[in-house]
Image 1 (spheres, rainbow, N blue to C red):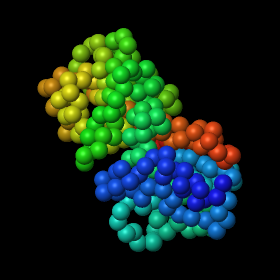
Image 2: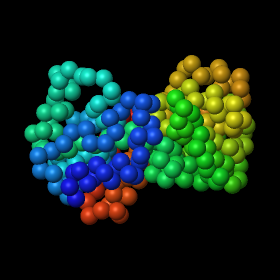
Image 3: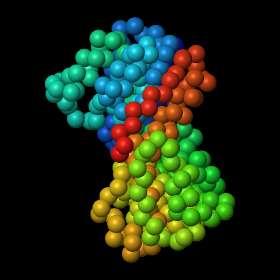
Length: 253
């Protein structure tokens, strides 16, 4: 597949124009390559040298990430940013990113996959961010405890979860917004949900959650955002003749 064909594929699959003006990420191809043919595509959460090196060692023509290199502001080509660009250019490896469109996708999104792992039913969009719904909510077919819910999405790779068990001991309804979305707990409270799941822990919502009587699980930024990239790698392998491989580069955060 040609690189432009892959770009068209991503744009059609994720419709990033739906979050234009909301998502600061440059969604799509961020760095091109001289050889436009793509036979091997690596996938990772972050555009970092560790991911780049692993992808290059595998012989990737393209690396697809959730967190790219360009976020709406011009960056001086110096330091770490220069080193990353230099590595990609020297290895003639393209870079593509998909941020909020990958969070909110109804099937491949981080939140959709987390809802599936939890076994939720009646799944629907949840979690408004600047006028766009980016998360998911749903209900367990049978009530579980907050700790049981946490175990269902524990990757078992040492990521540290933090649970605020301030809500009902029997959890039925859950809202999920992956990554750094602690503030959206207010929307879960307004919706009367039993539990809210996000990535990053945030001291500022502790007392709000306690006083509102909601369970909150901080499951880790990285740990809540591996799922969409993995699902996308599988979809690309199914839809195209591109060989794909996900590289796990955990941060522990």
